[in-house]
Amino acid sequence: MILGKQCSRKQESFEYQSVHVHEGMMKNLKSCHSYLGYQDFHSALFRVSRNPFPYEDLSPFLAQVVSSFGANHVMRGSDFPFVVEECGYKEAKEADSLIANRVPLSSSDLEWIMGKTAVQLFHG
Image (tube, rainbow, N blue to C red; front, side, top):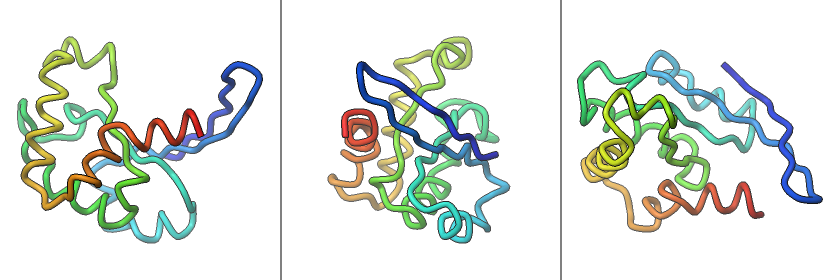
């Protein structure tokens, strides 16, 4: 599913597109990126994992998304407030770290995923 949103912040306005990535899209990630260009890819871990918390089955998924698009196009999201009912906000952040530690990511890649991409997107 491709979503385009118009967002406003103070006096400036910007447009961004995000793609909700799920397991069924994995084989088509590269063609999706070629077609769409710069995007941000996200999904609530608890919605796509086949396992309960801490969703470690998603490690290969993260590796493939980062490999296909680059860490500077991936950002962490909690899907708040829905995550509270599933595993809790704190636990969701812990799950992100557990999954990321199972993937060969550089410290720079992890910085992008855990915050720099969002800062770049929303603060330019």
